[in-house]
Length: 101
Figure 1 (cartoon, one colour):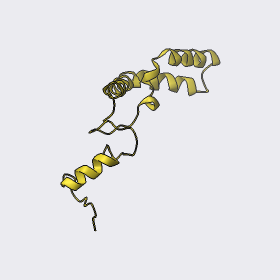
Figure 2 (tube, helix red, strand yellow):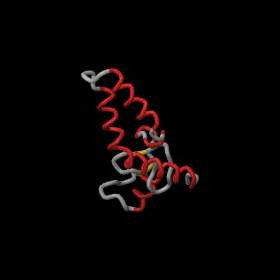
Figure 3 (cartoon, one colour):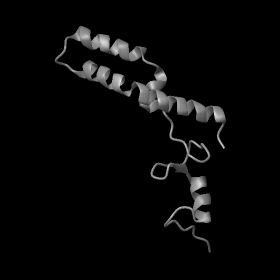
C-alpha cells in the first residue's frame, strides 16, 4: 500500500489538471502560433509559466486504484500487477484465469 500522502498528492494533481486544462490549452495555442507577433507569443509563454506546476498533465502519476502502487501499472485495468493477480485468482476479473500447475 502506498503512502496516503502520495495518493492524496496525485489526486490533487489530477484535480488541478482538469481545472487548468482549458486555460493551458489556450495559452499553448497562442504560444505555438507562428503567425502571431513574437511579443504576444512570449507573453503567452510567461502566463503559461505562472500557472501551477502541478497543473501540467505530465506530472500526474499512474497509480493502482486498489493499492496506490505506482509501478507495474496496467492502463487498461487501472491496477498494478499485484492487485491484478489477487483479483484474477479470486475470479473478480472476467476472462482472466491464473495458471497453476
